[in-house]
Every structure is written in C-alpha cells, then in structure tokens.
Length: 598
Image (cartoon, rainbow, N blue to C red):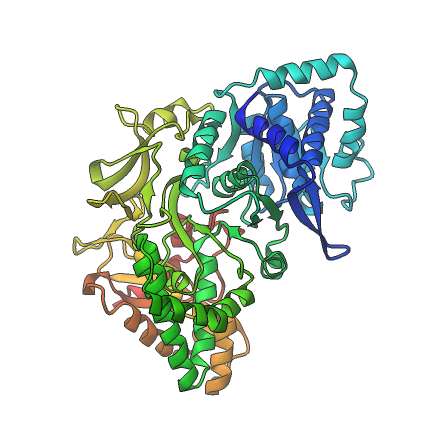
C-alpha cells in the first residue's frame, strides 16, 4: 500500500470522528464536514465502483472540476485501484481538454458542474462521464453519464471477488506507481504530462513535515487554488498528512467571504492575492488623518523589528519591543487580520510568481507569516521555501534537504532529488531534453545561490530578452513591481530587439473609475478611461516613481493602457495566470507597434 493511502487509513484509525474535509453547502450557507473515518470509507466504496466500471491498474482517470470534496475522494479511490488521477483545470475550453484526453488516453472522466458536463459531452474518446454536482441536468439523450452519488450503490453491491481484487491492487501499490499526471501550462507549446510517482509525494511529505513544523494536527487549512495545480495538490496532501482539516473553496468568486467564515490557520496562495491585500490596506491608511497614519506607521515599525529582525532570525525580542508589540497586536494587527480573514493565521505559503520584497516585509510585520517558496510541476511543487527562522527576504528560501540545487549554464537553476519527475508521459524526447547528462532537471529559471545557501530567481530564461542596444532585460521584475500600484492590475513588458522597454498596462478599472470621478474626468466606459490623456499622465507619473531606482535601460519608456484584461479565454494567460508572451504580442501587435513609432 502506498504511503498516501496508509496516511488515510492511519488518520481514520486515530482521528476517526474529526473532520478531514469541510465544504460550504451553498443551499444552507453552512460549512459541512466529512470525518476521517467517513472519508476513508467513501474512498473504498468509490474504488469498488471504479472496478465495477471496468477501471484497471494503470488507467488514467480524468478530473475536470472546481475544488470539491468528491475530487479528493476520487483521487484516493483511483489510487486504491493503482489507477492514475489526471486533474484538469476547470477553466479549460473543449479544445484544450481534448488535447489532454487524447494525450493521457482518458476514458473515464469525472466532471464538476453544468458547464463542465456540457463541455465533456463534446469530447471524443471518453467512454463514461461521472458528474459530481447533483444539480447538473443531463441531456435527454444521454444514457451513459451517471452521478457521483450513484456510484455508491455500485460499491455496496460489489461481490467478494471484486473486493478481493481491489484489496489486492491496493496492497500491491508501489512507490514507483504514478500518483498523478499533472499537465504543464504550456506557455510556449503544447502542455506536457508530468509523471509524478508516489515516491515524489512521499519525499515531499517527509521534507515538509520537517520544514513546516509550526503546523499541527489541530490546525485548519483553507484551499482555494485549483487542485489541478501541483502547488495546491501538494499542499492539501501535506495538510492531510499532518492531520489538519482542509476547508475547500469551490467558487473563486466566494474566496474572500469564505476566507472570513473559515478563518484558517494556514492557506497556500499566489502573490497576486497578497498584492491586492497590500494595495487595499494602503488605500485605507492613505485615507486616515495624519495622527492615525503616524500611529500605523509606528506599529508597522515595531512589528518589523519584532517579527523580522528578532523572531525571524530566531532571537527573542527585547522586553520593551515585546510589550509594545503585544499592545499593538490587540490594537491594530489582530483587527487588520480579522478583516482579511486570517486572524488565527500561522503560515501562508506563497509561490507561482515573484512577490515584492516590500509586501513580504509588510505582511510579516503585521503578523501574517508569509512563507515564500519556489517549485515546478516537475519537482512535485517545492524546491525551496523560507525556513521558520533565518529566512532572507528577497530570496525564494532554502532548498529542501532532500534535493540538490546548483546553478548551470546561463545561470539556470538545476534540481536533482527524489521529488523530481520521472519524465513526461509518452514523450521521451522532451524527457531527455529536460535533464542534464548528470541527471539534473533543467528548470528553465535563471537564478543564483548566496553564501548561506539561499536561492534567488531572476527570471524565466525564455522570457529574458535583449534590446537592440544589447542590454538584457528581465521582464518579470517590472511585471511584479508595477501591479503593486492601486491603479495597475496587469502588465506585459515589451522590448525584445527594440530600442527601449515599453509596456502594455491593464488598469484597475474600479480604482480608476473612482479617481476619474474625484478629478472630474468624463469617462463612462473602460475604453474611455484607458483612452484618457489625463489618466495616462497620472499613471505615467506613478510608473516613473516606482522605477526610478532602476537603470535607465531597464525602465519603461512608453506604455499603452488597455481597455480589457489579459485572459485565459483569449489565450494570453495560462491557467496558472502566467503570460503567454507570444499570444500577447500577436493579439496586441497594433498597440505594440504604435509605441515604437518615431
């Protein structure tokens, strides 16, 4: 039996009546729980039902759904049959899903809501669809699709031979079995199926239990990033391994409400979430009178001294600082965290993109323990992250003890260890190209390692470009910096083989509309706002101030305000919200060329 399944069995035995998973019942507005004992039983019953549907060892099982408890039950049921879960982003369109269905050879597909069922009906090659949401209306001519809850009678009805067979499969589970296939976002080509054996997750669980020792089995985690992303999948597996309860957020639009209702101790996240929190808090501070502003700035300074200078380096703060902090914790910090929904927060891992050092310092100062990390699908998520003490702001943490990290040609970060993928599914050419002759995985990221072993990332090597003047530009530096402004939502840096750096800027239209009203600027649509010369001048001044510390050749010289955001639907963003630069350059060719007219 593989370790993840042993974990479920062990937790059910020792914590049987405690909640493993919680979810919001939108009909009643209450949070419901699934105990460890029940979760374990459900995964066994669905495993028997899968056998009844003809699932064999090694079959690929598709999961096309937003985060729901049924996804995790399906995961562990598949593992009991030594089948391979293949999570698929719930935002993908039919063409993109079809590619994964074909590449992975998926015949059994589990879908979440009405929209996913309707897209699944257009797919070829799928033998059977199983629907999670009971409210989904099936087509009148659909006689093959079944509801997830309809699988339980199949499991109950399994005879002794079927039960023996599934039990045999479970017992024969090996570390080399694939725990899942995770498809890359495909920023520069077709997605590739990353093979992650159980051994990869086993190693990650062991490493994280050591590194994230501040979390305990009494803690509650909130999960809202897609379970189709390796970061969230690994995080949820870790929380379950630790014995924590995981509250699943189904609808991204409900995140802030649900976060305040759950009030978790821990939550994984991406930098953009914290950028928006930072902007919102600073807007409130700017609206205060001078006395309150001074008090808040003083509180932040005390928090920085106590949490970063002292606790962050593993030292006890002086008594005077500690006393001031305890007062400010009650008067300021706790209230601030309560508004966000993280009053009881212990740890908030963040990865997926670079986060501003100023934001990390601020959040740490007010008692929001950000754990900056770095990883890829191919490394089963984490390569490095902040240790509990001794972390270096600006870095992406210390590598986990289980992996070896070194810097190769072109300053590329190279990784080797038990958490690294065994390769790309049915793609030996891509697998061979992804590894150095001595077995290190090529991350595609440029970086460095300091004398203390902290890892730093510069940019994606493929994203680095050179201006026509021969200067190298790391676009993600500006693409991380500029959206910290309250009037800027998204940025795409342009400049490859151009005379200077320019930018496509998507404004924060909500904030911009408020500014226009206050300044008496006539604008009724987003296009009016983006086309306003007065607004362009205002944002130009703000961009100049933010980048004044950069070398002249690195600075944005011209920019265009766009009237619509970059989107997944238009192909400009991946499902992990990374820019597809080739698509952006194509879709906004006219705007780009206009910026380079003499």
